[in-house]
Amino acid sequence: APAFAAIDVGDAMKEMGKNYRLVMKDTDATSLKQDLASLRAAAVKAQSGVPGNMQKDAADSANRKTFAAGMKEFINQVDVASKLADEGKVPEAKAEAAKLKDLMKEYHGKLGV
Image 1 (tube, rainbow, N blue to C red):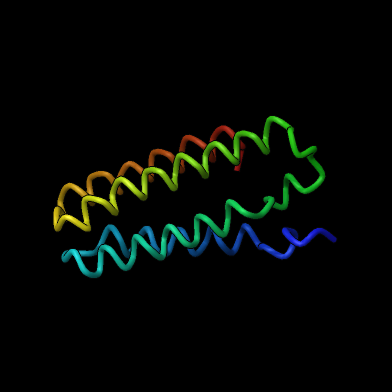
Image 2: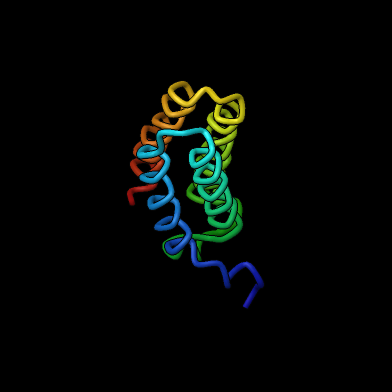
């Protein structure tokens, strides 16, 4: 089996969900930065794998391309929120982080998951 098969995308997605909930509960820049970093790490982990329902799809299939695009957009949005958190702008960072939920809904809808 290829090396990337060892990544459990489902587990990484669960970790992303847990970290997202923590981010949305954070009230100070320090914990927000830590939880955004954990969220980003989980997203990068998920991005490096192939979701179970796409294992048999070709590498250049529409679903895999959509998954890759969604993960890239998600990580970019985490980076936007992290930059604001680094500047101590907690409300603004959380507002940017809240947009992650819309991205999740959009791509989960596109992929039917």
